[in-house]
Image (cartoon, rainbow, N blue to C red; front, side, top):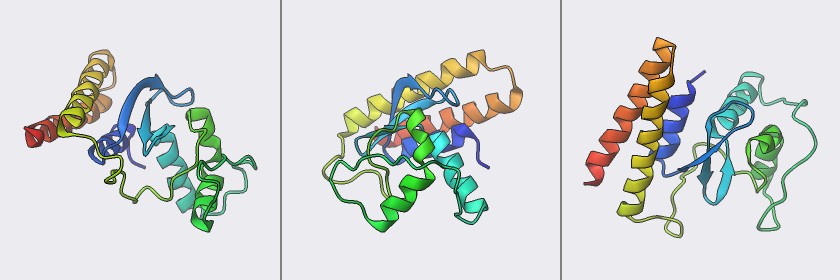
Length: 157
């Protein structure tokens, strides 16, 4: 299973926005992706465990989030079932298809300046976490995430 920092770095690189709020389940920052707010770490971990169990996940609960568009595809319904528990992580909106979908579209693309400020904020948050981290392996993971963020900032110059 991937580390939380790797997951967060991947979402940041794909254009997700890290928020100042944290997940009540795992403590990781919440993210906004295509207008939806949820914990990417909990979502990825649930998706990974669903893949490991062959997609059969009868313990996720029956409560599904309402769709903002009013319609749901079969794929959306499957993802909603698999991630119903992530509502506790801040996701009360419609669930996204799969993690491999493209996050930034023409309609919600932000300017380089906005993206730069978001990445800078994420790097600052990660640096603060490094200062308080006690486990060396977690420090290394956080430093790798900071390095990725700095590389992104260089590319945006």
